[in-house]
Length: 341
Image 1: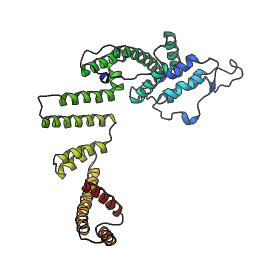
Image 2 (image 1 turned 30 degrees about the horizontal axis):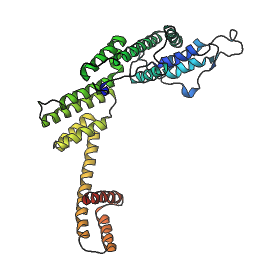
Image 3 (image 1 turned 60 degrees about the vertical axis):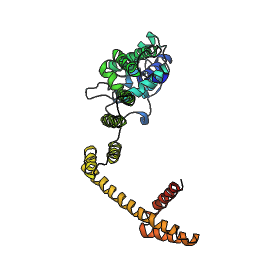
Image 4 (image 1 turned 180 degrees about the horizontal axis):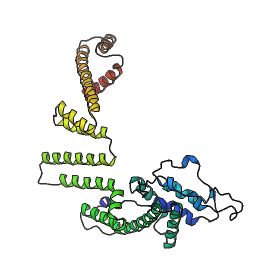
């Protein structure tokens, strides 16, 4: 099986990097809490619940230090964890923000962390984030780490099934370590794109379908993907509407169909604005077509270069406003290049 079919999803823990620093650095190394500019102000993140005071000791127990100083490794933990989201109940939210941090963290941590070091990482998280959120973050750290090691072993085995079957086994492996709900949320984007790719390949390689049937199924598949990406917030509504309108025009859809599509994906106001822009564009194109035909007559009239250019400039002034003439010149250059081929 070609290597390109191997689907490798990097996992790591945002908390891991900071936890590793806490484990490695000397216990008496300290620095001030991070400056205000790096502190997350969103009240729905780990940063809003982080307890700096839990990492400091009274001045009497730490001669030469102040109560505001914390170990450098704790600042590292904070910098990694601060953007992770919490829901209304204070639970850690498994989403793309968490996943990106986890991936980065695993790469820094590496595959040889001892059990003792893992426990130290979890202790650091629970200290800075007491309660439910800290427990969840510490547990997901261990689950991620164990899964990532299992994934490395899984990907090192010979592949004796189709790419789609191999991918589904990887999905089940994630769920076995992370839990189905957490795994599916963290890998929602990869799963959406991966399954779309396998479905597209299946359509394209199906010898029982005609070219027309393949095209129709591919278009329906792309529309489903766009709907899913919209729901995930990974595709802007304007972009989705533009793609769908383009397909509708290729199919000969009416202006009413295009308006209804834009209204459904955007809003009635946006649909009206875009319809007005379409009319303006159609009017401009009509004027350019008229200009281009008149320009051809000038080019074929046998005039010397100076007179020819003078008359073309007059045509530009006749057909276009001052604001439109630069676009008309650029379009004219493009059409000249096209005609020269």
